[in-house]
Length: 186
Image (cartoon, rainbow, N blue to C red; front, side, top):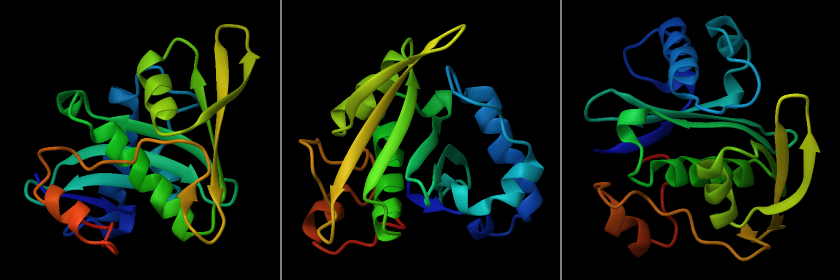
């Protein structure tokens, strides 16, 4: 598996409309306990800067999808297809989204997680996000988490576990050997 974080217009040999349909389908079919609505393909195309695809360059498969509002630092979605779960890819995708935000000047990240979504809560907490408060809703309780970035250093201000590439990634050793790595491809 050779993974790359791609935007919807960066998938080779596939029209943007088809990419948007796949993104929307993955969010609908694999977004267990996901907050918010599932974006239509038209909404994905309308807001291409929000969506990131964890793309397997060897097979052409979409492994997962993430979404962030760079302007506000709100991480909106982190979804890994079921057949790829349990391999550290959620951590990898979230870490890549955070790195992309840092490159774009985000200093404070926010994520809202359903209280009953234990897997996502454990993931964001392990990445250094701190629980801020609970937001009771009619049918669920949302927990708000924040992660502060130290300006100009790109380092997390709270204790974190670094976003590791998955152990079976082809470039795992290279990730740790190079100080200035190319985070677009792993």
